[in-house]
Image 1 (cartoon, rainbow, N blue to C red):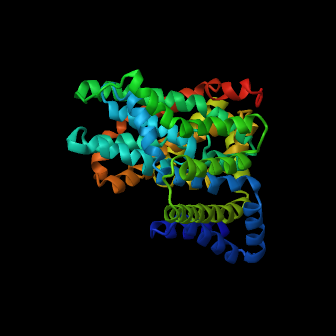
Image 2: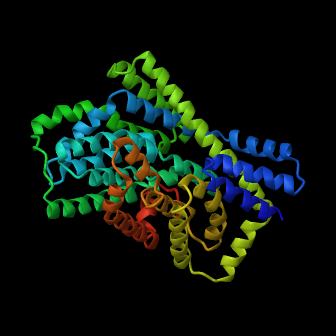
Length: 429
């Protein structure tokens, strides 16, 4: 009875277009009412477990960093450097899109922030005077922004660390090589497309001209390295490092570049609060929903079923890839991470799969899901921001989806790609 009510209310609410966090809350409370449990006690335990977690403080801090960088003109300096470094290649602005998103991901930790920042700016540059088809520009920005969940500091990785009780430091390191590999794979795909379709290259910038551009971009470029250095040297925890990163971003905007006024700062703070509240609502709904699922014994039943199938670790990982990609067609990535992944982590651990490697596989699936038609969030974000039709973006994105899936399979089958850096730093055996 309880499971039926839980599923029915959730499906109806989601089908009516209710925000996912509210849909999960409604389903959770309907379950509590149907099973005669005290909602107050469960909610109190859930909220205490959620908001007393020290690690979660890093989430609004990294959101704040991204918003400061977006509002302070730092992006223009990063884009100028990326254009000077890779714009000379055929399809230059598309390459700039990938590289600038890779760099900005190291400051924002969020795919949507990347899409609204460098993704939007470069897409507009690409579409100016019809230099690139609008659909191609939009698709490039969407897939470039998928690097966000993989590049440290990654907000989804922080959530996964809570779910799997894994080391945030190890996860951040594990995402570096796959992120660089994904960047190289996407740039290779762009090079092939650009040559076939005759896309233009940008005017090359000489080393003398590039040097001052690099110097201007160096302070924000140094932020990801500074952040990782603080964490891995043991100077600060990831949460404390997030606070340092927020302070660093403020100093850059207010003192070094003097490009952020008090009114803009107020807007940054307000937007950070709004985005944090939206994530908090989803997490609250997920915790209540997960309580109902756990109380019905579904995680144990799923684990026992999968164990009874005697799947080899590789077969399990490939099955997880298929499951998550199918779910990504209908469910947003944060919901998958907070509701579905907790059911899979115990099975992965029971099969002897390294949970850091498993976390990177999950992040790669989330990357594909963000740009996967017909539900991919980033496709609609870029469409709304640029005014490009979703259909035009859909037509250009399949080759990039194939590239991302190829990287996903490589990391799935070769754990060393993800685990090399964590092993080098002594995080895993």
